[in-house]
Image 1 (cartoon, rainbow, N blue to C red):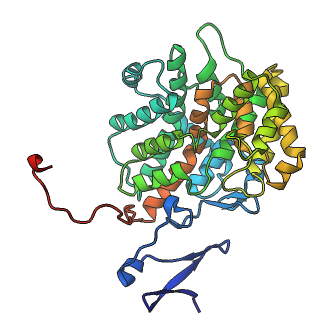
Image 2: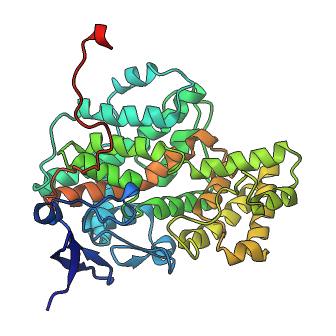
Image 3: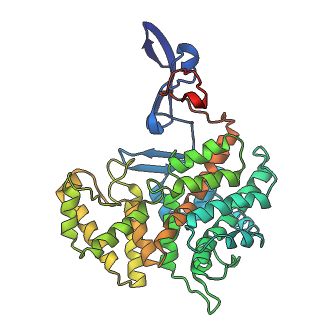
Length: 427
């Protein structure tokens, strides 16, 4: 017998079905609430509201679990590469060797960006933030690919996926090249996806760029860890924009803008800004630890704890080792990274932080890795967007194939009641 939930309102009782997910998550289906009762729910930030059913990512913040399509993030980060995980998220299963080879080759077919896109990027000042440029360029791709995607046509949808993955990586690196005043680079089809990111960013006409395998491996892991994270702000944005049947590029452009916000994708940038503040004020880590413990002090340690993971961030455990590998491989001597190591030691050993589960999270370690690689702070969120791209595509695809209705939240109106209009000379 199916379960129901009972709501009592003004002396009347109403029954609503209870939905149980495959991981025993329980939800009360209130789709008919307003029709039955005339009332709506209110849930600012949608913290208790399920906007959809999804088979992509499972997240349990209390237990520190993250799985893509049922696979533990620990296994994927250790045994798969980024494009394998992208394929898994978008097409529901891990690819066979032949499917993966075809996927990589088909992405390469779409890595050449129309030369007229350079006219658009030339219109931005060098001071423009890379995320703003990336959002605009992603939206502009619609002009060069005006045909809407038929989501029920497997061939069309597959080509759109490959095109998006191929072109997005290139335009993402162009935002950095523009800011630095460097000539724009092109994808090298003889190299891998993540390795291409490094050379697209850093190779100069004056000589070839040599990549370090440990650095490429660490970046590959970071992209995997960021690939999807359930119904977060940017993912929900992609789904709600796509629910109007807006195209893939337009929906992803909206996701980029949502990710840009400092409360979402800017967390690892905030870590570096905090480290810089500590350094500029004498580098006394103990002093700032005391400030963080003081409830009356406005200072907060960035990159510790997580609003979803109440115990520990499983991604941080994975990337901690990669961070150590990168620092060792590059032999970076950086005072900010020394401060980061001291803060990490405190957070892992101090009872105050341990009791509150304020462990270093993925943003803490990703910021350290990006800094060691020589990536400027303003590019951190762009790298987050590259990693999150497969998740956005998978969520957009799922939403469209499920035939979800256009997103249209309700509200509780708190403004004036009806008022009589007064002409301007009576006001």
